[in-house]
Figure 1 (cartoon, rainbow, N blue to C red):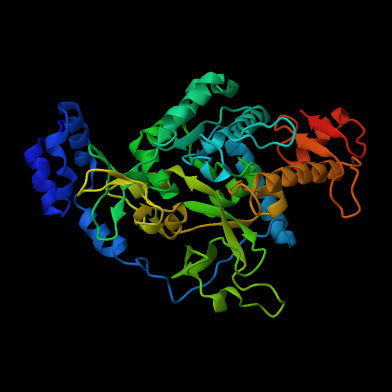
Figure 2: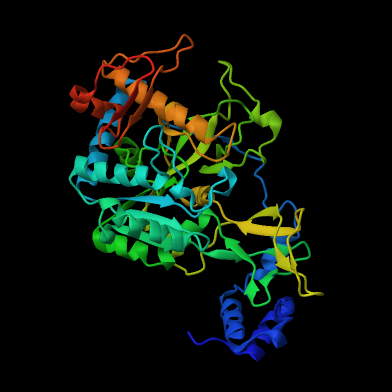
Length: 476
């Protein structure tokens, strides 16, 4: 595409109230001018005025439904003979699809480790209890173990962001794609959205650079399509994408039961859910709105609704969203078919470094000064006519690494990895020493090559040494 000239750029920008982006045009070198024109050409000039009006200047841009009810779900284990039969059938369907290579793993990995005090892509954060394997390595080993288990090449899709794409690619190249084969790992970038001041003017990050930020995990549905990765999956015969986020090392990458239920119900997008730890836990709430599964954010669900209980004492809105999904490839294709697909925008008030238009100097604000826009993947759920929710168990599948200390910290994640390994060993009949308060009195790490699920442990039980209090045991 030929880059627009400065006169056309000025007309376009002035037409949408963003002419200030050329404030420093006279100071720029030809190279800098070319770079700025390329960025201007990439702006969504058709939609920016609407974004400013509806989201940037509107503190409550998204309409929260007033009529909603709890969404139905499948329990983690079958509760009736009929359900037992359905689960067995679903698991068979899922295993068959995996053996046929019709499933790809899809992780969104655009985040940095900043909140963890770590410099670099979050996927490079070392998290396992003994070997200190990075999140990328844990998932790579899980993909390799699943390929061996099902005898199929299950592609791995990794969405990065402009913040960390280069470093992520370097990580995979230096590690020889963790032995998976470069042609079976697909790295691609999510899109970006401009950053605005409170008046709706787009910030300049530098005199020749528009301030932008990644468009959120919801951008994954657009990036899959625009990057050509979705078309590549179609060529490879992949029909389903198993989606998770980079910060959760306990996730079961390829769950045949979840996959099978999704297929049996003819769903476009399905989700795993947790029973919330308490009414106001900071997770999205699965609800039904006009018969469609919808996530209402914890900040948008009124407290009186969040605290409502059933006669048996359970929460009415008990299902929490944990960003584990199955996506049908055809569903993502259909969303993108008209070329203008976009999920609702969420606004976040942030400190945004920028160039002061009056002085031309860089400002590093000490308080929030503008708006970043992002999209969330769960907003695609109501676009799916049918959607399955399968409950999972927190200790089995949810230990996100988000904060340097306290809740969702590396220390909590490491402890949960140890406890899950201990639980799996005990289910297989191995004696694990415990402290008086019930915690495993040892440090355990179970490699994906040893077991991907509790059921897999039995095949390798002969490799488990006697475990004494205080022992450090790595199983592979």
